Amino acid sequence: MRNAASRPPEERGLTRDGVRLLAATPDGLAHATFGDVGHFLRPGDVLVVNTSATIAAAVDGSRADGRLVTTHFSTPLDDGTWLIELRQNSAEHERVRDAYAGEIVALPSGASLTLLHRYPEADSDRLWAVLVTTASDSAVDDYLARHGRPIRYSYVPDPWPLTAYQTVFSRDRGSAEMPSAGRPFTGDLVAGLIAAGVIFAPITLHAGVASLESHEAPLPERFTVPEPTARLVNLARRSGNRVVAVGTTATRAIESAADEGGTVHATEGWTDLVLGGDEPTRVVNGLVTGWHDPEASHLALLQAVAGPELVAAAYAEAERAGYLWHEFGDSCLLLPPVN
Image 1: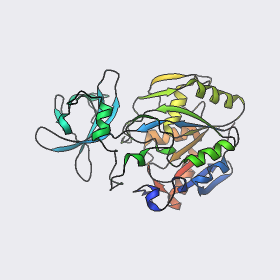
Image 2: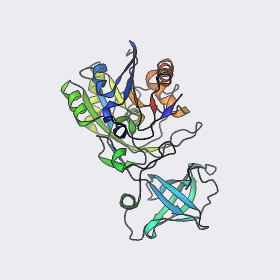
Image 3: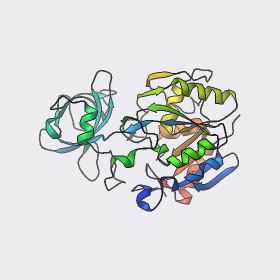
């Protein structure tokens, strides 16, 4: 039985690092709180963390016939257009499936968006490439900061401020939805881990909307792996230390910067990497993640890091023990045997 966390742990009487942690290691499965994550790490381990900050990506709008919709801003493209998702402005927040090219959706304060074409394929029914017009010609991210709110789904019935959707690592705004694996970290926890010899290496990957269907592969995302991070990860691998990604976004970024031999290079651009059984990780050999519905691409990435047996055992135990799902929920640390 999966139970979704409907509000932040701070609203449930916990600290951020007070959520539950299931550690899946070569020694078996262990239950702890996230503040104890250091008990499962070793000096010299490198934690790859995502510095992307969440944007206020949801904006209410209206169609020409008066029907209300919610626009989820996902990703800016290189040509200045944006990818967006349209949802019905209702309790179910179902997708809008009857939109059409050329349609104009009115947004607050005189802004609007014009639907250009479906993305990534003409028969796709989730994302649109759109031209965004603001009344004052302000940048879209500035417009969202004034008029948007965080994206939330039906399992989170109440609104929470944007600060609830940021991690301690958030620096560079750009994610439509929070890179939530890093949420349980606190400043004090990070300081304690550093004092214990754990190394933090930052990347940036801006995550788009995460409402993928089970058959859909993850879409291309913009990422940066800086030179100092590449050096730290390569040194850890040469020294026999573990590279533990904090989240699937960090995994995708660092693996996208690795060559066939597993050497990481400073890289910036777009990644369309899809990890899974046919594409195992070359660099990452541990993963901190939240509990999310195991749709195909997410589950395949976990298995690419930890293998199907360990992932299956962890999910089964989490369901048995009543762990909480989604961005405000509990956590998992996957540490498979290192060859």
